[in-house]
Amino acid sequence: MPVQLICCSHSPLMTTGIEETEQGVQGQFFRELDTCAAALHKFNPDLVVVFGPDHFNGFFYELMPAFCIGTAAEGTKDWHLEAGPLRVPRELALNCVRHLQSRDFDVALSHAMKVDHGITIPLFKLTGALARYSVLPVFINCAADPRPSFRRVRGFGSVIGEFLAGQDMKITVIGSGGLSHDPPTPRIDHSKPEATQRLVDYAAPTQADYDAREGRVIKAARDLVNGMGPCLPPSEQWDREFLESFIGAKLEDFDTMSDAEIDRVAGFGAHEVRTWVAAAAAVQKMGSLRAELRYYHLVPEWITGMGIVVGQAQ
Image (cartoon, rainbow, N blue to C red; front, side, top):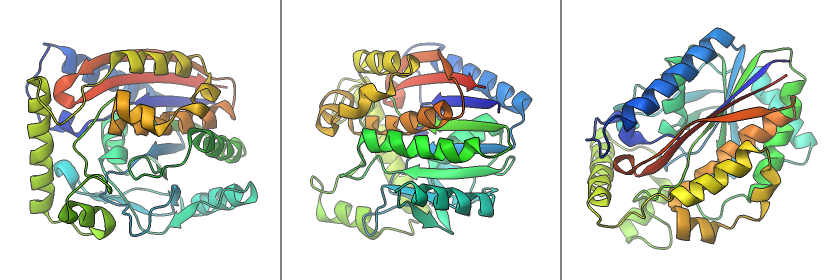
């Protein structure tokens, strides 16, 4: 069964036109994404599986699952992205949940999943729309401590791969997130009460709320470029070490990775590489994975080490 893998960093700042710190770097990233998009359209998958995080736009501490699969999903309006429904194959999503349960993963289920830029940016950039292809949205908690371990994430991806291997489909698997970055996201134990409350049950942000939050992120990005806080600069060394193991298909190397070390060296947003690990583990269960690095560069104005890895399995 032919399978395509695309793992790519996302940064909502890539939607803003923020000024470049190094000429041509942003354009090179977008050109490589366009190349990936062309390859996806040529492949013409029957199903696109997106492993993605959330940034307290769809999932909150009121009830925070480690993993969730949607039988229906709709994009949020964060960063002025177009909202709307994804085309989710309901019965396939339910059967995936049942398979996970049979393998001791009691995954959360949503019949009305809200997905933010962590899933909508790769759909827009790689497929051109939220509903051009059938999409299975898979949420992994990367932002809300405590998170699932990398070992558990790898196992979760593997079991989804087992399920997908039983489908008579051409499948594109996307891992969306990372690499190193430290956005000014409020944190449950280190924020003012009003910010903490937003993490708990802030389920209906207004456009004014979105605009205020996004303005703070843009300001933080410009402060980072100018050598000011609060964001930790992205780490090329950490990114390169991660990518070396990832491209070498040594996913077990990440089992002992600690959240404290990620926070200290790579930043709060780097926990999103869990999506890459799960996506690659799924593809490994469907065939022999061959992966290659297509883009890597630090993009300080996007606060992020930006990477693109593509692969295929047969």
